[in-house]
Image (cartoon, rainbow, N blue to C red; front, side):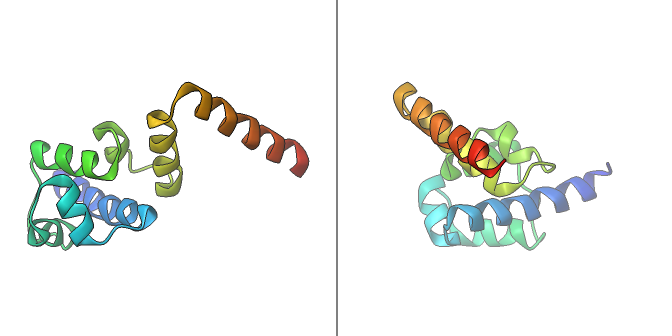
Length: 107
């Protein structure tokens, strides 16, 4: 993948993840300790983000950097997995039980 294509993919991924979490640019900026205009410039391809900036954005989204950069995964699934990683072991177990019950019911 060419660098410009990667930047375009990351910009689209950032917006999709922000939408999947229900965050506005303002809310994400506050969580990431950034200015709104920085996020807008990244999403509109007016600026290429640094690795440090991407790391701050991932943290603001409650994700690991590698999850944010995985442009092949559905954004809603990425957000869900991020929330599961932050949950307690008991909460993770309960969530897994509910998912398995739903999958079994759908068969």
